Image (cartoon, rainbow, N blue to C red; front, side):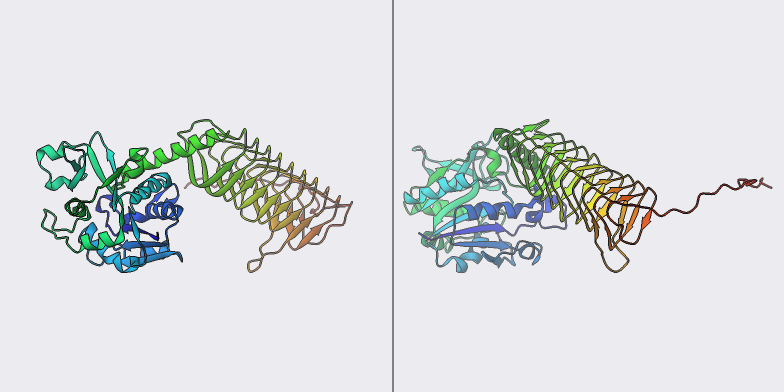
Length: 456
């Protein structure tokens, strides 16, 4: 049967104290709503419809995708009203899965279990028992343990408020039944809103045997209403990711101090020290070691490479058995072959460095092609930008670049060439020769160092 996923994401989120719509606040580097969309996709719906409101077009603009249908709720009159707005886009489906844009950690397995209940019933709810259910709608059952209704906190009696089983709001329902029940909704309640939960009592009246499913953890169904809740779910989610890495053979110096804001794959015997930050798509092969306070974004790093403390790598490909850092920066479009050493306070940008080459101290190499077994001394700069255009520097195999050298691109340093320390090279340097540019050293007799004039 055709399935439609409906995500309600129109709330303002006043407790976030933010100009940004609540569903665009990030968890693990991704918008809350983005997490829900990805999980909805995992159950292979035929349609995904999102109801938005607060923030206007900012939400659909930032999360636009070809498989998403956006419906604006101009008047926010409750969850039932939000679903009413989306019904026209769900006419072709037989089943509707209703999710919430501020409940980011719902799992695919839980949703699969919920949907499987529609084989036995027209309506299935996701419920959970909480030690402190304050603020949530309570699940009211009869003497036969059958669900008979949901009562909201503000409308609950004292006895009903003592119930610990709460409604998560997430449910699966046959579309035809949903349409009929929505048509009967009213707003005769404390909030003067159309509650989607009121369809539960209607289902009971119609003799529907309502099915209930529980998630594996209560964090799966926790919503984000303020920054404290967002921080709690961030750390919970990061701990889950850390445990997954350790299960796959990685060692984490402290599993509570890692931030994965994208997707990380690791081989065996990978070591991650404290405060490593992962962004985008990162792969670490067997035996890679990453020091403390390292940032890796959209990188692939091959076997046995070590990244030392406080280094930043972005959109780079790193070969095997390399040594990088500490305090190194590898910028986008840089590729390092095997056994390359990039030392402290070295910056690479859009450069390729071949096997066994070393750039160990305080250098900038940009828009360059560095051959095999090259040694680049401290303080070397490839001057690649003339104020309007970028130019390339080519350094041949086995070249030796002395300290404090400026290579004025475009320029070629031949194979086996040696550049004397302190040189400014603006013309091609021939292979197997020493090239240097220095002014004559002189000493001046009788020279007096200036002194400050005494104060008046």
